[in-house]
Length: 485
Image 1 (cartoon, one colour):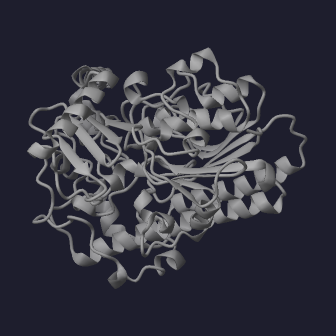
Image 2 (cartoon, rainbow, N blue to C red):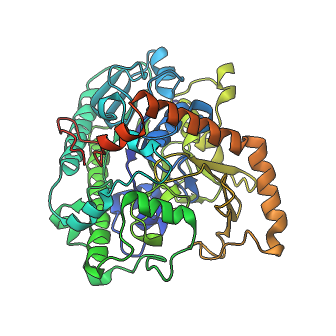
Image 3 (cartoon, rainbow, N blue to C red):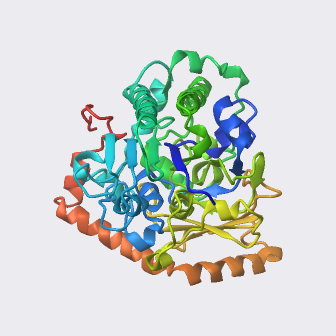
């Protein structure tokens, strides 16, 4: 495959269910839809952890969370584990990030040759409140998000405007420079992450009465599972919400998805306008999804498709156009994809990488391939592990009081029927249990995560000190002061 540049477009909290090309009947994402039509769309792509910081660490390192120990939003990537940015930079290739990283600090040696307007965790520490996983911590942040949801402006909207402008300018500048080696530009937008406020023109695309009611939203329809109850309690989501609040929140989220798509369009136009599209491949994904009211949840932090599923689109030379690949993939596949794209040879040290190049996976179906995700963070009292293979998705909870789940996504894509206790699926469950045991020891990993989190809580002055410190909700944009509550 011919070495080429890579434009890696990334977003925050964009569920694969909120794109037209992934089948949503209402959400307008014309630029991403057109991108998918030009390349290969991976219909079963997953985050390796459905929360920002661990997901982005897995993306950077190509390794699972249990292997690196970046468990939660209070322990961010600091460069100690080799990343694809380190690999490229060590070989003298231009590797630039613009926008959100959610690493520990801009001063850490994370490998990028240049990072423009980066967003990292607050104070190098991030959100310690999420380390309190005994049910005592309540953020209440989504109560505020939902109350204010609608049309307007926010620092995140402005931040994405700035990221887009800088990315366009970067593409204009690189055109004028002589590059002996392919470059990689990681343009990382922050929408549609809360606050749930959309620019008016994009909010107006979604009349409230046109929006379908969320899956299993009402208390009478909601899955009676302690994991669902825990995350709702942690986020302070009321048992019931006014219909207008639900619809406004959904419309604003969809509006943010369309605003994101509009910015993607501006960047792709700049790529074309500057004569770079013929020698630049494009990859698009997001760090995790968003429930947007499904199961009575707003946010992520669970293993339902709307939260753990992400878009993944690959376009360019050597990539089949208009193709949909059902083989499960995940963020750890991005490391070898990036090194493949720019023509780097595989090294012995790559044996620790968990992924495979998406260029290889795009070449044909692999029905036995497994995608893996795990969660050890805010709102979960127990470690959670997900395996996706073929038609089935299995979720294991370490705590015995949390029932495992098994869904046949071919016949039940909305995950309404848990098959885990049905006799006809006993063998399927047993196979997944064996595969998980081969991958890791869930109980041991859970104990590792909890031990590390308890140590950080103690170092911060103890449980009460962390509770008294409160939470700042979302990570502030560069120049914005965090507001604790």
